[in-house]
Length: 84
Image 1 (cartoon, one colour):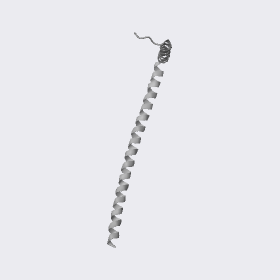
Image 2 (cartoon, rainbow, N blue to C red; image 1 turned 60 degrees about the vertical axis):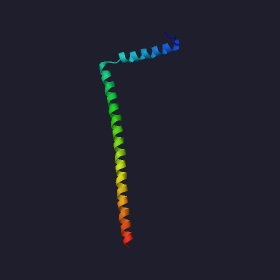
Image 3 (tube, rainbow, N blue to C red; image 1 turned 60 degrees about the horizontal axis):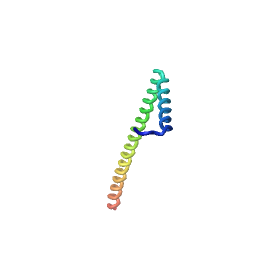
Image 4 (cartoon, one colour; image 1 turned 90 degrees about the horizontal axis):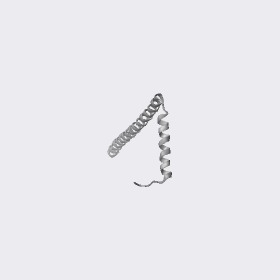
């Protein structure tokens, strides 16, 4: 068995006791509120992630379309200028 520093043991015991007090002190209605809050935060984060990803994809598509339009305009401009 390994010996541990008494301060580290007491620190862990303090955190464990504080956590158990907080958990045991919540009623069922409070737990429902906590779970609801966590689900709301998770939904918000997931929505923002997919919205940002969609915005980046739309930006890439827009840039590709603009490049294609620019290339077509350059081709059209070059063919009319070579006819003169």
